[in-house]
Image 1 (cartoon, rainbow, N blue to C red):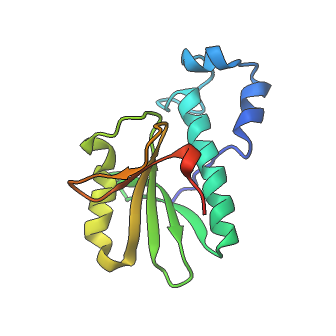
Image 2 (tube, rainbow, N blue to C red; image 1 turned 180 degrees about the vertical axis):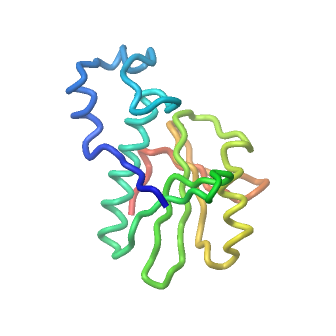
Length: 146
C-alpha cells in the first residue's frame, strides 16, 4: 500500500501559500497533485487527520488508510485498536451526505462484519446523526472527539 500524506498543520499550510479565508472558499490555491481535490478539501482532510491521530494515539490505537489494489475501494482513515478491530472514517467537505459518499464504508462493513466497530463520515455540517439506510454515522468535524 502506498503511503498517504496529510499536512501536520493545515492552518500553517494555508498561511505559507498566502491564502486568506475568502480565497480558500473560492477554491483558490495550489493542487497537491494532478487530479486532487480542492486545496480547501485537502486542508479539511488534513485537519481531520490531525484530530483523529491525536485521539487515536491517546487511546493506544493507530490510524491507517485503505485503498484496494486497483483503487476500486478506498477509505480515508482506518482507526485500528490493538485487538485488530477498526473504525472506518471518510471525510467530506460538505454538510450533505449522499449514498455515493458512503459506498466504500458500506462495502467495508460487509467485508469486515464484526471486525468493524463503526463507520462514520466526517463533514462540515452542524448535526451528528446516523443514516437510516445503512447506519453510517455522520459527524461534523467540530463535534469529533475522543
